[in-house]
Length: 262
Image (cartoon, rainbow, N blue to C red; front, side, top):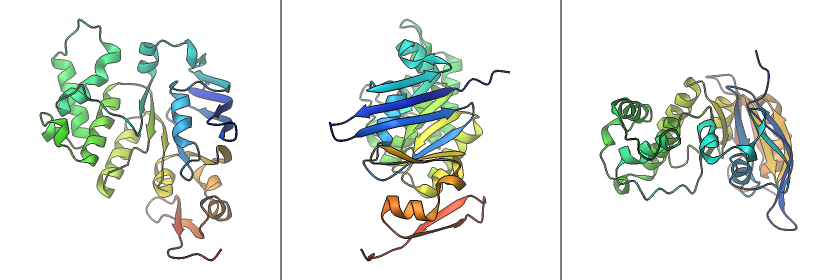
């Protein structure tokens, strides 16, 4: 049995400006690992995801996908291995929800191939997973922000990639669909790298966390290792307590409300 990581990067750096950037990131993701990227706004979460997806070229460092340099993959090969859902995703070529999700088939189709009965069944299955089975023929323009987010998640699930890269996947979703969506991904035995603002969602659904601040990795490891009160207070500049979630036993962070003395 191969012990080769699904994704690995070594000494990965990227420059936003001469003074700011993402610096010296190392990570290893094995099959069915779920890695949460956490940190304040501007810490580099979205940049790291775009680097791992090959949308940005690193200033230095290596990214290996299944043991091969990411740059050696063609667009179609890469799309069959990994799927990215970015915060700024906008697909204007689809008029209905069904057509938007159908775009997830593109890496597996030739231009002349049509969507067949099996494909249509799979589309309806992923729509059911994200709670949109009854909106397949609804115009994309009529969806709420949360519904649109779920439709995009259905698209990347249909893509069939082994690795999902999701930038704030629970953005615009209410509590019910946040948990439903993350549970659907976890139950599909997929590998995941996702950025989170909600530290408790990251702790509950990820077995690994990376904490970024100003482009630097300040902690990496299990949720128990990363979510240390003194460190979280320092990075997020707000007092907090960390205890255990009574439902799953994972670390739970509670920040102090109101004004905080300097």
